[in-house]
Amino acid sequence: MAKVMISVPDEFLLEIDKTAEAEHRTRSELIREALRQYTQTAKGYTKPADNPVVRDAAAQLRSVRWKGRFDSTQIIRKMRDSRYTK
Image (cartoon, rainbow, N blue to C red):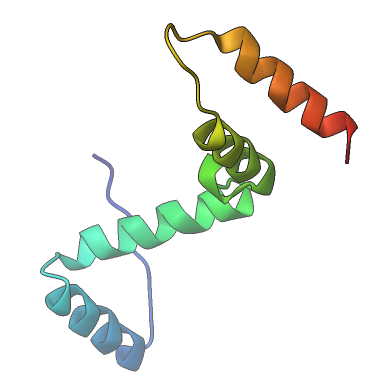
């Protein structure tokens, strides 16, 4: 693992250390997680569940009830047809 040296104001470092202690993490773990989240956000990354289209599709799938054997064709047709009626 590579090491990186950064400079931060003393007050900010105290805040980082308090947060790390409260979350039972090391300073390095906290900073790695913060950078990971920042770089994913900067790339426009969002979790699939945060996408409204994905949420709507999942809600539609949960609303489908079928009897007997599972048939994905029925679900796909229902979802496709609901798009054209909006």
